[in-house]
Amino acid sequence: MARSRTAPGQIDLVTRYREVRGLSEALAAPLSDADATVQSMPDASPAKWHLAHVSWFFECFVLRDHVPGYAPFDPHYAYLFNSYYEAEGPRHARPMRGMLTRPTLEEIRAYRAHVDRALAAALPMLMPDAQALVLLGLHHEQQHQELMLTDVQHLLSLNPLEPALYDAPNALPAPLPGPLHWIEGRQGLVEIGDDGKSDFAFDCETPRHKTVLHPHALAHRPITNGEWIAFIEDGGYADAALWLSDGWAWVQAERIEAPLYWRRGDQGWTRFGLDGRKPVNPAAPVSHVSLYEADAYARWAGARLPTEAEWESAALNVAPTSGNQLDGSACPRPRAADGGSALTQMYGDVWEWTGSAYRPHPGFRAAEGAVGEYNGKFMSGQFVLKGGSCATPRGHMRPSYRNFFYPHQRWQFTGLRLAKDL
Image (cartoon, rainbow, N blue to C red):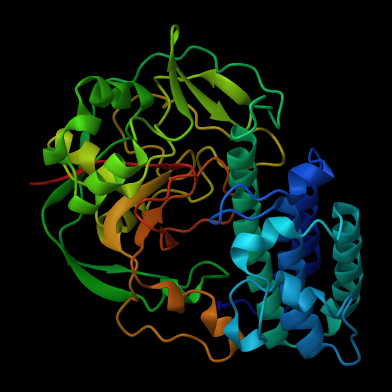
């Protein structure tokens, strides 16, 4: 559930709704029906399912519950496109979403248009609690926009043709950034969590609370591909002493030797992206690494991963709309650092793993009802990532934003920034 603090009229929900929904359509425009139907792994979902699920969210929690007389577009869709809401009843099994050859992509687009028309007509009459659900639904759809892109990337990477979703040229040569600079962080008692300054926050970002930071410093930029290649060439993936026990078991079982989508050839390293297979850009932040890999690299570098509180405290004076984030349907890919020694790339390019478990903030209470299942029930076995990526829609981020994944997962644009004790 969300904490929406803005009174009706302060947010132009009609415009925001149109923009967010329009971006989803633009991102899906290059996809064929087959592209949008196939599921590449249980962790990913077909693009068609993403497009339908976010519409089901609005239909279920807003139109059904707050618009008298609303009739569902199709009574079967509640079963097909519920994700994990136990309170909403049974659902199609997640690993089987790729079996939904019907409804077609065009039928899903018709469903979206139906929901859009109904919500546009209802928005001016919705009460504040229903408007808060619309705002939640828009942020929810932005999350699925990023997931849709990264799920399609994984799908296309398994096609022997390695097709590009976007026609984008190779990245222009960029100078390698200089050595890492260390930025001393705040010490002592600090406050983290939602500060109430944005018009929206997910419930897992609350409540704001005090925590103690010990002397530490953060690297001024993320780790680059070039630095990661040095880790590989030094035998980082073969040195058990660098790895957590679970991570070493994962490396051995999965035969991991490099970040996801990387391949070594006669001409050096290449990687697969939404722009197809391209040479690895040594100046860009490394991406598609797991927590296990990030932790091993940090140990190899004589450092560690930052805590969530250290990262969030450092980001308080950085504009969340800054950096390389998703704008329209241009091809998302991490960009090289601009250089310098100031704190940079805190937002965009790659999500940054922290060493903090995804657990509730002190005093956290999940909302009642089905929407209370949105975040709280996933607070087990996962780790927090901060800062967004090149596939995160601009305007979606805040210092308190908490992304979370299991330590072995790496199909998102996930990278790392180092920290050290002082």
